[in-house]
Image (cartoon, rainbow, N blue to C red):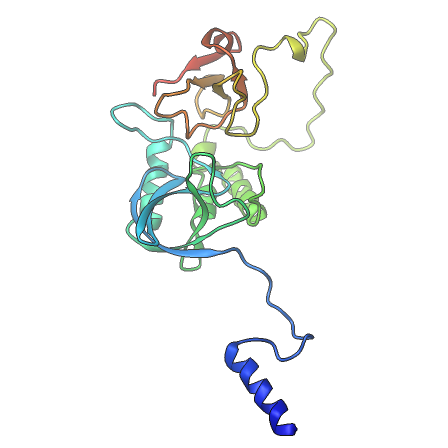
Length: 250
């Protein structure tokens, strides 16, 4: 009987299974895919060869300014973000760590991009070439990204060169007076999420432009529409202009 027990334990070890129910299990980690970067598109997007095909990979939790593309000017620091990311991951083997949501609405693979032990998402943010975007279920490394962003902003790196430092002990904003316009009077509608507008208000308004413009709006069908975030949505271009937005040049 003893030899049978020993044989069963040996079989479990060979198969890599725990011999008893009390064994500790290592913390769960997201599914990872090996890849090779074939092209860097911006500070937050790459093309990588994964599982026999080229995938468009979007960095989770990071929004970088757009670089120049197709003769059209990009956003300030967009070309610098592209160069930085190219030096970081260009033509390198990477590990793509996936999170809860593996693809976005445009079919792009969403990943934390690792080069060895270096998390590219955090490096882009930490050097001021992108900002942290939140929302959705992919938050595994959110605390790391926020910490690196705070460091970059405090040091006025990249996109934060002209930004005011985080206020400390600032007094709360005064309450709006009775004569101030109400929220209901503002043109547009809130987005469905940070990237999607309701069908009734398809035009995207981006208020985080890294420029002196209050807002830039993007029309459906234009090249930059799918990759543009949104803070406010509009039913028409007139409505977007009423809210202080100008039309994107892309």
